[in-house]
Length: 150
Image 1 (cartoon, rainbow, N blue to C red):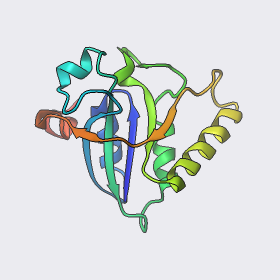
Image 2 (image 1 turned 180 degrees about the horizontal axis):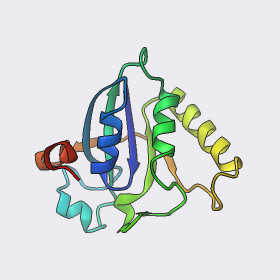
Image 3 (image 1 turned 180 degrees about the vertical axis):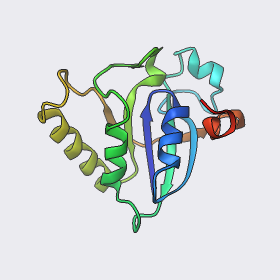
């Protein structure tokens, strides 16, 4: 099965999910913008509307979508609009790109539960939107931390 998340710089997000039991493969790329086959430089211009994201192939017999959502929520700040740490721009937005109605419902339910839990002092701004075309990023971005370290 497939899941796609945007949570800031895709290098860190990919590394977290790649190390998660039940995740079979990951790839980083660009999603949700208005330009076909964007380059990293185009996405970083903050003019294309794309988010840096990770696309995950996972085995639902080993890890559930809900567990993937927990990894997502617990490893970035979903209350900052178009920003994660020092990275600023729409490409760094918090987003869940669902692939079917079941994922949409689970994502909305988890967001609502987390928002009402009091864990965050500000409201969650994470987008939950249908997964449009995912454009794989340039090869040097794939498994970046595995290749280069922190």
